[in-house]
Length: 318
Image (tube, rainbow, N blue to C red; front, side, top):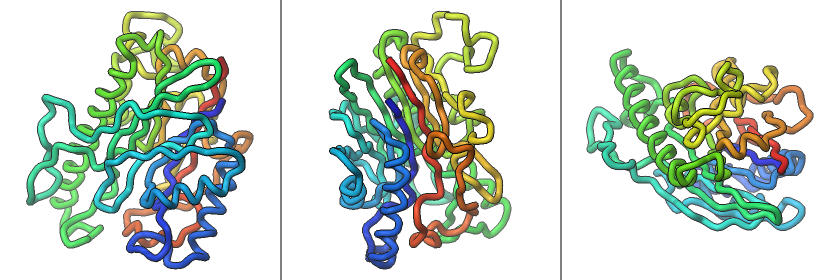
């Protein structure tokens, strides 16, 4: 079974404020996405940047077989939300956007009220197979792309850049705390007994502080001396599978010419024992061709074919 996560990049139907300008561009995007999903052959694909629920249904309709779409009800100001595209039946167990108590509202700009909610909801489902079931959560944390007052993507000065960088970090950290809080409930006190996977676009790399929040107790990371030494922290930990991805594939986006892994899959102890492979792009490929994106207006790519992210996936055998 293959589980994956993919930022579909501005999946909207054409004609609106954010989607492709015409039907031809929309159909080209859907065809590109469908070709990758067909080659990927996932049982569960966590998706981000779904702007129109109908667009995800259009994409599912281009795939062979029966597919289910499940979306969060909590979207951002552009209608962007997370969800799942699955060939297996699922049922929703949580769809949340409030920061957990006692995390206080965080500042997100020079003016305006602080916010106590994530920009996009965190959705969790239980996936049922013939042999077993597991819980999967999907998230899309605050981007490092900074936007300023008046729709600007460039600061007036370096002081403004520093402040808005801090505001974005505040929000991403609070959102990571929300994801970790939900993961704790899914683990039910012991991830050695419960199969849990957290998938999504964390908008930061493996060693980033916000990513590390999701792991739980320190120690036992893949590739460290403590990995094969069980301890009491195993009950609450999540393991990032990034070290299992071949080095030449270990990126999911290219930013300003630099490869970075900002899309992640984290698994509980019991599920970690079932992971047989991990990668990005399509299984069997050595690297993924992606466009290099910068810090400009994301609307510049509204007619782009495909996505500026690569899928990240794990294969499990039980």
